[in-house]
Length: 236
Length: 288
Ligand SMILES: Nc1ncnc2c1ncn2[C@@H]1O[C@H](COP(=O)(O)OP(=O)(O)O)[C@@H](O)[C@H]1O
Ligand SMILES: [Mg+2]
Image (cartoon, rainbow over all chains, first blue to last red; front, side):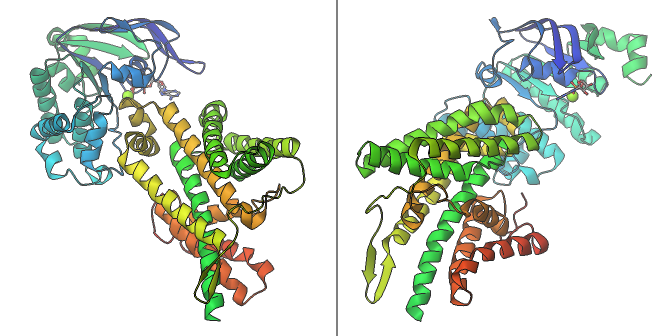
């Protein structure tokens, strides 16, 4: 579904990604773990066309997207749920959700059906639908950001640190719904996380990114048993 | 006396709506790009000259068609400015964009002088005349300004809140990063914003021709007064600019009852300073 091959990415003169390869199959959950500043978000934003790779190729659903503009990539129904939620603070919850479907041409009946689907996944959003997004709690904003992304019926979805800044209880719930959504939508999912344990326990495969280099990858189960990984990412 | 006051209020309202339009124009650019546009007085000038000096006087085109042509030209000039000037400046420190728009202003001023000359250009009959309501004699220009500005403000609100393009503009103003991830073309949205802003400038330009004539310094201080309107009403918030603009316009006009007319420009600056000191969030208290 997605194939990133040998990309280099720079911010000005500073290199952030070195010869990175990364692949996602038709129906799997893939996680990318790595410490703060490793380049995880840079990789996501490069796939989304925000940063342009200086070298290498990116292919999504059989098309080259390495030099395509962000809005057109979204039009190809690759959805990125950004780090830090990034809701539209002065719009209502419902209007935020409607914006999620900007790239689609839904009839109002389809739009309502889509909204109801989202409200089923996150009932709290239904209660809060006319509240301003900026006035909600961090957890609620994260739910909104996810639901907003799913409004466009993506062919693939990438979550960037969905657990950031949330209480442990909400984190569990968040990951449960991510898995549930994956199962109902039957689309590949990428999860970028510093919370390595959570990301690895729900994913099929895991990539490890450090200092802009892919340090390794493999089946999540096996990696979780490896002593090195345990020591470096799972706290013993 | 009552009549004089009423006339002053109507004149003040008209100027107030002009300041409100300037402030709205500041606001939508600020929201869309995080840039302050210091060339808009020149865009007002350009709009007035395109209409009056070029289309009406030189080409002999009828007024209504000249207005439409002017609106089309200013829209595309705005779009061009967005792609050529604003977009490259957006990622640089604010001082570059300020310098850039000031330079653009100078280029337009000199361009206008070069193309249409130094002397005032008479435009006979455009929006002039008086309207009688009983004893009251009102300048027709004021009434037209008030009606056009009010319609424009309402249309703009509907456009921003009810249309897909307008909604995209609001998204870009609230969160550029997220807007792109919704599939919004942020560059295009910013260009449309700049185009609309230039159109508003053009409309202001043709509205003030009967008040200040078609000449190089016709825009006077309406740029800075529009800015003051935003601060007084609440910067970065369209209703704030409207309230601030009308307040400044009316107070300024009424001030001529107590002080000589040449001092009336001081009113807006006093209000600006007082609000910056006492209530920087403006009358409507909106947090920018
Ligand atoms: N917009 C930017 N401009 C310059 N450097 C950046 C920018 N964004 C990220 N970086 C740098 O790139 C590196 C990777 O950052 P990032 O991709 O955000 O890491 P992660 O998401 O893994 O925490 C860091 O060293 C960071 O400082
Ligand atoms: Mg990150």
